[in-house]
Length: 390
Image (cartoon, rainbow, N blue to C red; front, side, top):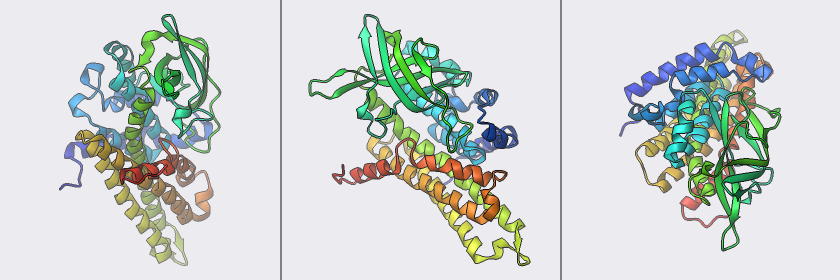
């Protein structure tokens, strides 16, 4: 039993860490303040190969040299410096590339993947609606087949990577009919950016993730060719549920990066800041809080990379789903706690935007919500134990 990453993955970690510290570190505070999405950095992430870590070589990806675990390592290291860049990668691969890679036709893959894998473009996935979040089956967006075209009408909200200057498409879930039992038939349809009737509304003014691109979307008689159906008609909801399992582990990795940052920032500050003639790290009240952060870090990292290893090993879907939910709920809730502790350790300075702990504190809360709330994770874990929870 080995709890360490392979040497080549640790070398890859150092490469991404170096990139994050040099390309992101000096600028993220200003970009966060300006709510600026730097497209040029996304292109650099693509040049480093980060968007292709789960894709075959034929589309420009890493092929056998990449893995889901390597994607988690990259997300963790980006998230250690800035959470917005971590989620940009997470969504770009997990919600943009992977659905096409997993469910797309050969023609769809050839058309969209090379640019997405290279980081020249981004794609989003439109699932959430004003009345359909965790209850995705309550989708109200509709798509009707009119001859050789789908006509899409409806709205989506909280969609990442959906309104950038390099967004190439957003895959949207929509009702495409009614099943014999009266339930909605939900399918996934790819709607290219620039399609008449498809509008990325003004970006949200968010609590955190200020550098990340997030928009509400509207569809008014947006027409796309019939061959833009992604996967099997009526399987859109099931396809997205499978996509979410990967996303939960990736969000756990993003959380691990945040906890790592809190440990490092607090340790450094506790050694430098003095009170009553001694470093505050000499006080048990401070030192024990930082020790708790270290415990949370190790536990969250082990849970996260165990789930990622199950994915890479092709473990049964139920086993991976269970591990993904456990990693997600523990790592994200630990990250929220870690930022609260870090802010407390920094005292009044932790309340000032000039210190990164303030930004991390704002960024943390969404981790417990996106890709399935903590409540949903507990429901899935309970069901995995055979409990008939609703």
